[in-house]
Image (cartoon, rainbow, N blue to C red; front, side):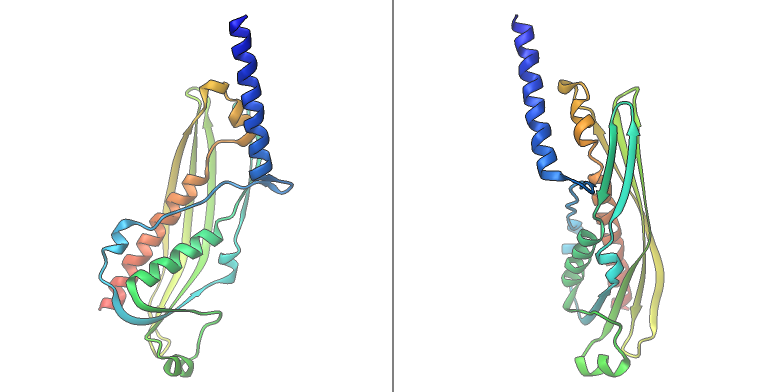
Length: 220
């Protein structure tokens, strides 16, 4: 009787968790994984450069979201909506304000005359080149592996709007999520594996790479 009671309590607890998750994270358009990256601590250790920089992030990047579908015997059937653009753009802005003494957010690429009038020393443009997610489950060990391959195209311009550099930055983000054995995979069935950390990892890596590139270019 005691074992049966424990089993019932587990089912009730799981049911409540499932309802809370659905109410908070799932919509008609799919499950939205939480994406909350943080700046690499090494960025705060960089010496700020005395530069007034204009930062232009492509509006398509700011609003970028990515739909992914998963159908797995262990994880279940899920439609994910990864809202990648907003947290990525915010982290790029935070990074720029750490490594330059003044940053002005731009809506369009300024002309040489505008740069001179506003006192801009440089302009940075950032756009999305590629974003690819791999969502997989290793059923033998009941773990999910998420990978995020992210590529940005970046330009760094001088006062005459000439390219100091024009290149692509690519990284691979990765995360591992283990099944909750207490519910025997039940949580995965409802919420799906936690793939958000793979995107966070990619964002953190590419923003740090960008900080290094900009710091080196502006310091020369």
